[in-house]
Length: 605
Ligand code: SPV
Ligand code: MN
Picture (cartoon, rainbow, N blue to C red):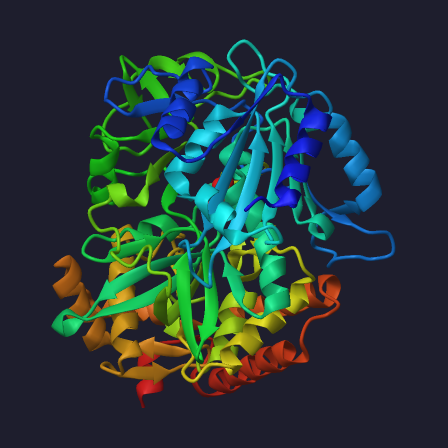
């Protein structure tokens, strides 16, 4: 049945952007094949790779990641979101972005795509509609999302949907957006619409990824469920059981590679919807594909996806180096050629950008887009309309100094506050700007939160209180460094052991020791798991180094977190300060007994 709001959105988009043609993708095989062919015919994707199904897309040099400065919430006059969120007066922002979009599709086709966010025909399903002038964007959506045209037809004339209008804007002869200083990604909560212009990088342009996600967070807040920046995976435990975990990590902090661990099953690597169904937390993957970081994908650390990327099949590579029909990326485990084609055009070793900085062969944030079904260990429940039951949730930042590699919270509330809402990390190449700047990234979702930040924390706290048995909340930290030499204390593969330990904890099958910041694993259990999972010897010395509670560092962390909330989040729930206060008290007490650096063995006494 026709939804007049669909027609209205398309008509308004067309009036504003003035495309020469409109192509409505019906999700038929022919339409999808046409989108794929057009992406190549317009040179948005270059067919210069040898393996069947492989194409490459290049983004401009100022368009290699999500752009936080250009991303703004449109806020009606008199209202304000939390200070830490980038915002602009709604009328002013709308006028600006409409100005950028005006006539932007002259000479081009506007593609209309419908998707189902989450499995179709499910209580989780949210419908999305995007108008874009990029065939690359439309093609990526085939790989990453479930089709929605039929769902829209079934949903009837009054159904709700999220809307995205995108234009790549002015393009150069390489079909790359050039007006990066007029880039805008504006979120209009009032109209459930996102405008994105003068950008092609998928995190800013593929409407159903981070754009619709921002709108979904608001919808979830109103409706009492959670939209999260989380992986979903099935962890295999003793006796053939499978236990599902969700995991929130900021971009480029190990989320995808955790989700893909060999021997476990991947249900999602980026965005999850979580609902309380009869007092049980159930979750689905909003997406059906992966837009993953390719740097460091090599046969040793990410064997599953390495195999997929080096065999034929439908894959869009972005911002890699191409030479003789082959894609190359940083950390792929073999040498890179010293010339080729990359995001800067013809590239050679030593080539410099306009500021005199050397251009790397492939960008650190080079990526691949591929369907999850291409992975051998894709979880069979991917399209289950009831989702999967969540038993555990992990939060992981990039914390060099304070948190131990893995710990279990004392309660849902403690985990949400001490690990999620206190998540500290460093900026990475996944967003534009300086790398390595320490920051707080609430639940690793801060870039996408479209509601006051305190409300987001309150929503999480309340969600757990409603459940019969809330998932157990864990904190992980893959980036802890040695106090003396500054080296990482763990190898990349060690996370597999932490995951297996968490699985056993969920079922109460291993003991733990109680530290001021959470329950810690026991040495014997980790030693057994290191040997079973990685065939590695795990020494007591390593255990003590990794799991020593560093009191001063933890107290400093609490102070930073408190200051951040006091200064930026006027609606912080009081419960949060209470939980942090108690953590501080526990640390001070422990210091009195054991000193500044407390070996985990002390807590066994
Ligand atoms: C992330 O950066 O968190 C991603 C990729 O998942 S992006 O599409 O850029 O958001
Ligand atoms: Mn992400």
